[in-house]
Image 1 (cartoon, rainbow, N blue to C red):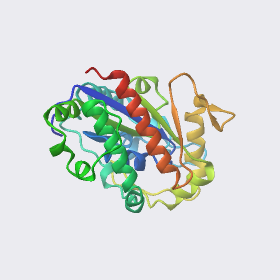
Image 2 (image 1 turned 45 degrees about the vertical axis):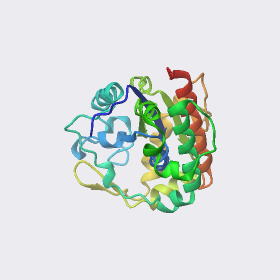
Image 3 (image 1 turned 180 degrees about the vertical axis):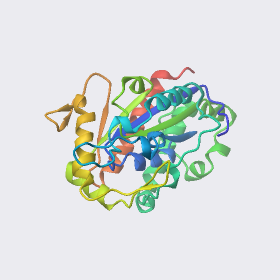
Image 4 (image 1 turned 120 degrees about the horizontal axis):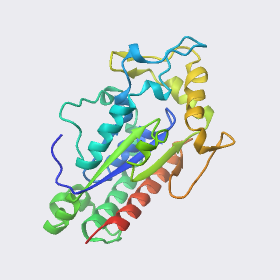
Amino acid sequence: MTKPSSNKIVLVGIGGASCSGKTTLAKLLTRILPNSWIFHQDDFFKCVSQIPIDPTTNLSNWDCPDAVDFPKFIKTLRQVHQTGLLPDSFRSKERLNVRNDIKLEAHLESLINQLSGRIINVLSDGSESNDIDQNDLNNKDENIGISSINNLSDWTFVLVDGFLLYWDMQVVKELDIKLFVQADYTTLKKRREERAGYVTVDGYWSDPPNYFDTMVWPNYVKSHRHLFKDHSEIRLTTDELVVLNSNGARDMQMNLEMAVENVLEFVRSNEVC
């Protein structure tokens, strides 16, 4: 990864259950936020031989905290926050997983351009104007002027995508913006069971029958119990979490808008002009 020239590195946490729409949201945000890329917690799963075995079902438990190499994840996360870079030796496997986001991305193209324009205006000159020429969006780095380019290059946005982002406080402390994507049990189960499988360090993993009910959902509830009220409602405490709902395709538009609003709020409160 090329060394960024930015001196303002913003870590945007996007957490939530498996199949809640975290990665889709992160991918769409890379279309909106300049100098942005995705850092996947899934790249820190342990190898198959180190994944805990559930004593009740005798199944590999990929959804508990012990399945993730947290010391390595935290160390790398801190480096990313300080430098905006991954270690030279780091290789992501997450890009090998197949995603079906093309139709959704096309449907949201107009909104993506609009939100991208807002971000560019604020980062380049502090303006909130939405009166943006489409050509400027398509050729934004060529049209906004030298000083504006310098302002844009001051910022790097790292979208931290993970199913256990809010379990360890050492991770939470590194996140500048904290988004939590939630969906109901029925929606999550349907999405998970429709997914073919996952690329792992050692090869490929496909869920065995009933894996969602025996592993995914119980571990999600257990690992996020400190965030829940009555096992259903997210507990909002101070400025810790921004909750986004993701039960349907229409929710993604609102989630993009809310995510961008939170980025803009952070930029306004941290920008030194």
